[in-house]
Structure formats: structure tokens, C-alpha cells
Length: 131
Image (cartoon, rainbow, N blue to C red; front, side, top):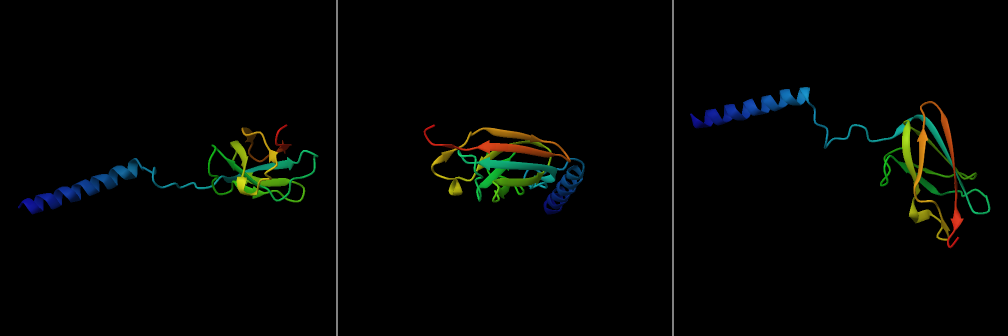
């Protein structure tokens, strides 16, 4: 008899959890939106101290400093431009240290706000270490 009561209790708890989960879904462990891809365009131009384009640099953007989500990593082209198609919002801009020139620096806290269905242009001027 005790076994039947325990099995009934487990079934009732599972059924109750299922019903409650349908009304109040918990997605803390499951991220349903992994990327920042969207319809706002962000063009970041990176220039060296002599105003020449900084090509082939990895530019990262994220909602908060840290590892960028999918859609938040691009490389600059021959004109020094990295183009992102992202969701509207405010983003931090930073660089991957692995391929960033060791003799140059950039302003660490670079933020930009992009607007839906518009192109936002941001220019970042690099400067030599020690200046």
C-alpha cells in the first residue's frame, strides 16, 4: 500500500510540475535567443595613428563586456571597416587581443547605440603605446 501511495505522489508531483511549467516557463538554463543578429546595421571603421585603415582586425561587440554572442564578431576589411547586422540596442565594442597590434592601444570603454532599420557609423582611432 505504501508503494502505491509513493508512486501516486510522484505522479501527482510530476503532473503538477508539468502544468505549472506550462503557465510559468523557466528558461534560466535554456537560452532561446543565442545571437544578436538583427536588422540594424553597424559599421565600425578602425584607423591607425596615421589614419590608414586597420585591416584584418577582429572587432567584437556585446551587450556587456565579455564573450560576444553569435553575430558579435567580424573582421575589418581592407578599408578598416567591420559591418554588423544586429538587433537595436547599446553595445560595447572591443577587440580580440590575439590579433590586435602589440604597438597600438584603443579607448577601452567604447559604446555605441544602434537603431532599428538604420545604419550607425562608428570610427575608432587607434593610438601608439605611450601617447
